[in-house]
Image 1 (cartoon, helix red, strand yellow):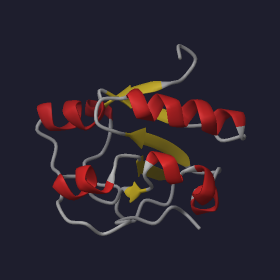
Image 2: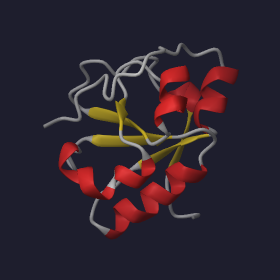
Image 3: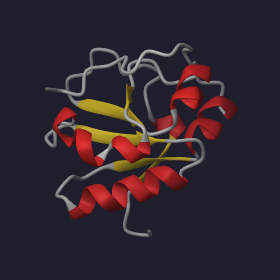
Image 4: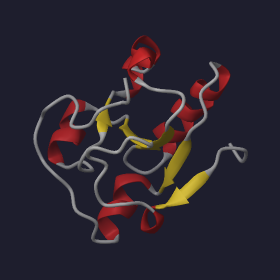
Length: 116
């Protein structure tokens, strides 16, 4: 897992709404998403990623977040095998909230535009 790029939450914007250059992909389960997510993130639970690749634009910077980074790393390993580059949000939503970054709540499937 050492070859996957990681970024600290402090280096990321608080909001990905309307970003045309980057996508924040949240791979947590529906209940985790509803309890708090990054504004403008795209929600695709881990198990659904292979079937929903067409929702991700490989030309955009792709940041992947989960609860603590474990699922993000697994998704990024898979994405690398199918030709997508991505960056792991180090520490996941735990780190996001520990640093006081804002979260939105709600159960909508996707807040942002995956670039397609």
